[in-house]
Length: 389
Image (cartoon, rainbow, N blue to C red):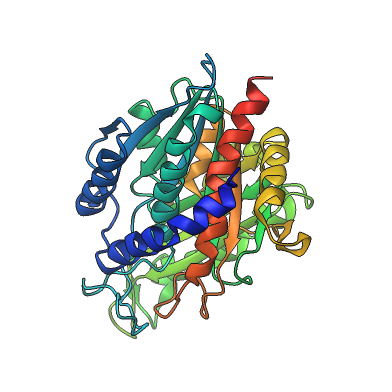
């Protein structure tokens, strides 16, 4: 009997061709119209029923014929690109100025499309439904919730997503049990004081000085507000204020990000920040307003789903050294939103990209696609077998 890994190898030319096509034509979040149309054409060719989501994206269901079952496993790939000018020099480099698939979402879509071909051929070997979610707008953290609102999570029992990673050897696959990606929050702080001449700061209320004090005090969130065993990051990354070297301005604006793994900490962050910011500003005769944008939730991998995935990986890797535990990291992943509806797991696939993620020169090794394509399909079959008892 042909193995899933062998089927993925046979489909590799098609997977690579699709990836290169998508790579040459990147589209930003909620603008993935060409990408969606391309994926839809593949579903049409395979005879897999699907529906389009608004404004972009696609949900397809492959129903097994190996027995009656209402169980459903979800596989997700994201579609959007980044505002980065590509500098790889590849023959299939981005044809759109200032836009690039530097996070590898083109590879995710291509591998899931390849897995769709495998699963469609294997419908008599599983009972239940495999739901394929080609999701827009992961980079903005809005796409997963958008798909959930349009029914992507309805009736699903378990889900898996894959993310390519340029920093590991090609074909290596790593996962974690428990927290695997941090929450992602964006905040804006406006500090208002009273402008005056720089030679007489006592005649006004200096918002720049207050902003500096706020930046320092915000780090007490990390060191004094939350348990030291639970990682928290608070970073102010952008400050604007003032027009002249000798004029204290009337206001200053700051932007930054907060990251955390604990859902309890994530829920408490806005209130703690508002208290520290407002009281620090008041002590320096200023006022401050905080606005919080909740981009992604913390992503926690279900031990149950992770156990199934680890077994799936071991069926497709060439040697044991290709399977490992992913390191803890503070990046965000909006697949986390699905985790509030059913158990999920995330696997990272090494592809030796020669440059960091989100870099203008990153070039993912296409040989990794065989393992990624096979992993999507193998997990779906193994998870359905587990759920069906």
